[in-house]
Length: 440
Image (cartoon, rainbow, N blue to C red; front, top):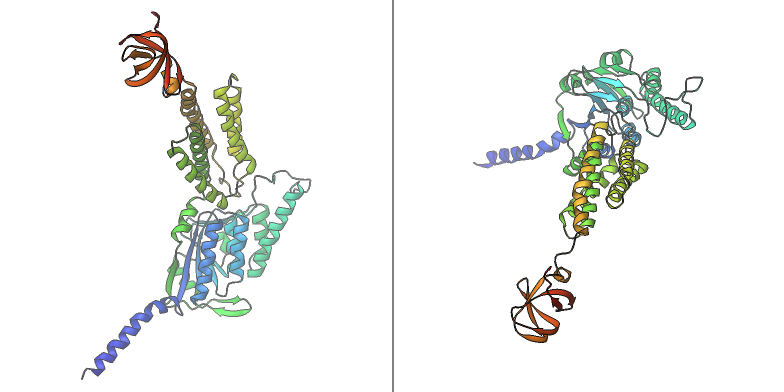
């Protein structure tokens, strides 16, 4: 009599177990976010999400994009993954107010389908590098330098090839690189730069439904009804490392590392400055894996500390301090080889850190140096010149009290109990004493 309910309960149990599989499999799509700069950490995270979507048999994956740009190498790695993906990659500049600038524009061009939310923008894809001068032009209006021409022409060709691959506006892609052209979401739609303008994810799914694209030589039709989203999030390790992708934070870590290590060398055994400096240096090394730095800038900043410390030992009438300030400021200005506008250090930050460093060197380090130069008041050398009171009568050798401690003493002559002498010399555990003069 209990047979049928038992079977029904078993079937219901199997259905419940299969729900997670259904949400990640046939009736699902992936969502991944790329926010902030395009760097190795962000790129690895998105690439992993695309590959996981393929393994989980998602119908497609939506890359929600909001970036001012980033590293060319990281951008190319991501685009390679998009171009070879076995499922469609939809790149959506989202939310409203987001941007697909510089590297973001290239990623948008590479997408199987791209979309923009109202209030977003795309473009400004001109290459930027502190080591290249694109402002200097020849008679034809092209970059004057050979290296600048090579970089610009290569970048233009790359943008055009992506636009040709996806059937988008090739001339716009060329202008976006050569002239750093930018456009709003509506202008981009009219210019055949983007395929869809969508208010939100629901609107995007609605407009994707029934759309036909070429996917690696085969036809693919989007069917978005009843699909379940699967969100891909950064691991905590990726999140922590990605937080270091900030030039100001990396610069601060470097200054803390130098200050801590210098303090430890000046005062061995303090432990705390050396520990803090060591941790900051490790975090600094992690940070420069994300954002490249200029080795010359690093050397100049280290030299500035050397100049400041030398000022404490030698009289240079301020010349070493001036050299240190100049070295620090110039080194900080060229420290980051950032391809982004604003990706370097603001001058206000550089100036503030220069003041902090000067205060640290001429207050903390100077105090440590003065202590090292001051007269030793502890140990055997600290006994010289102190009063020594005889504990008993003796001739030649006996015992005296110095600072509450009992010492063996030597004196050339007779000594009376309670008589006060002066410590003249320390010989191991024995003090040589002399008659205390009136002026002592």
